[in-house]
Length: 224
Image (tube, rainbow, N blue to C red; front, side, top):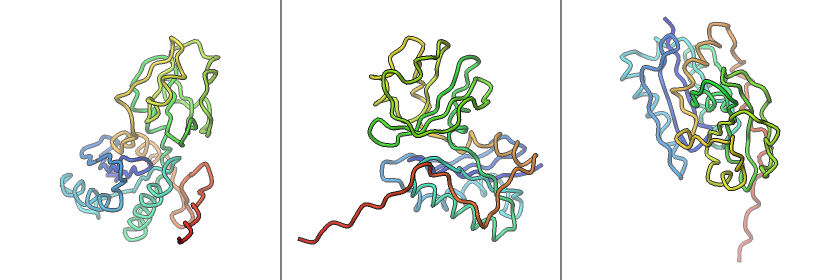
């Protein structure tokens, strides 16, 4: 009867859940433009544990979103997860952010393409079938009117890119599920549980988030 704490901070959504046997029993999340992860994350962790009626000693593993996504968001989530794993001597499970997002589509046929905004017309994307088996690995790509044009079956797009991509991706078989915008820790529960059962964990000391693109620090502005 394993309890897993799931942490998802790769996007604007700061999301935390407790799962029992792969089923979400409590979830707290908030999506804000200002990325309030640093202020909200530890509060949410304490709240979901309390609402689940357990203590941190009852946890069997910590799962964290591995990216791609926001550099700052991923760092905050992974740092918190590592700290808990070290303190409680628990295994760390890394969950692909786009797989979590794709699992929220809940469709029976066709392809699922989760996309996360990477600025301008660039996105982080992957391709899954309706059974959530990956068919194309994660890439950073520029979206054009020719993107995914070879697919004839229904393509379901999920993620935070609908506003900028709908005007370009206009084929009749393209469907935007605009109610699925951000990955949620609630959707991590089954994925993290499956990994836990297979002992599919990562090294707590050496694990790093999957940023996909190198982080480039903007140069400081010159003083006038």
